[in-house]
Image 1 (cartoon, one colour):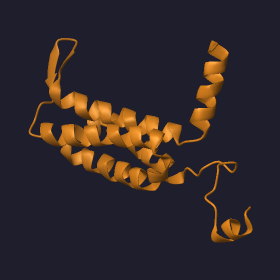
Image 2 (image 1 turned 90 degrees about the vertical axis):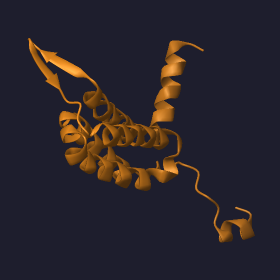
Image 3 (image 1 turned 135 degrees about the horizontal axis):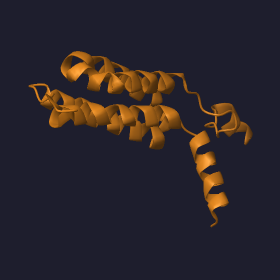
Length: 137
């Protein structure tokens, strides 16, 4: 398989699912999980965000990462995953250091909105209706 064939295959795979919604949702979980467990040093000023929100940050971040992956591989749960991502992102604002310093919050809101708005492509295989089964078509 050449690089061009692999890129074309990836493009086909990406077009059949809410790829960008999953990517934004996945990326939203990373800063939410990261900031409570790190000590930042901004030009000699120590910034420690480790608070009691560590457990909430870990739970919210892991759930957002899992929702992002599920959007890639289980497209039929896109509305549930989108609404859950929106709610978790909003909950991360008070619970997880302003939603991962607004990075995770904004990515989660964008990803959840994209997931709720995504519809399958027109040429996707539709399940057969009763009429189709009876007529054989």
